[in-house]
Length: 212
Image 1 (cartoon, rainbow, N blue to C red):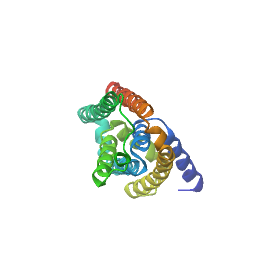
Image 2: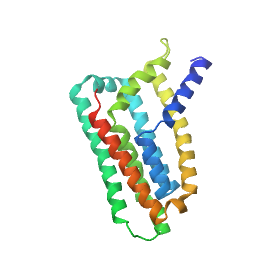
Image 3: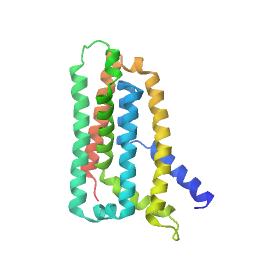
Image 4: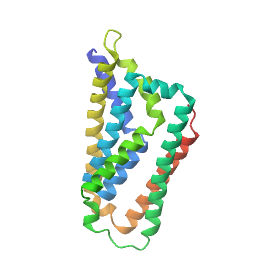
């Protein structure tokens, strides 16, 4: 790849990373309510899911998903279900915490189990997103030279994207987590749960209603 192609790819990845979506909603919620460590698990889970989709695209599996109405429908239903479940869970938390006092510090410094839960959540949300398969098929071929091996070049480009997005999302999570004490006051925490739940439910409905 020449320098102009690399720069175009980097700019495109930055724009994609900054666009609103399930990843942004999950990271902001985790960083605000659970702290930077938990948000790190979500970020790494999302990026692992993205890299697996990139490899699937290079291997032809993503093309099968995009072409198969049944496979796409299954992923769409699963993806919408995951987002709806996360959204309703946030709503329930907001409802339960009416009149609750400040969250204890320990609740926002999760142990290993909490980190792995956040990591798994990120992986599942990314892998259950049928639009990821379509995106990979449309995005990466534009940057793979005709004389380069498809799989190896796609894997390398995906690593670059993962590195850029990881740095971007971790910086975002760190910035949000720095104001964690304010975010975790009862009234603000309840509003964040309610708003993030609404966003996730809305994204789930959009995934369910989207065409192939």
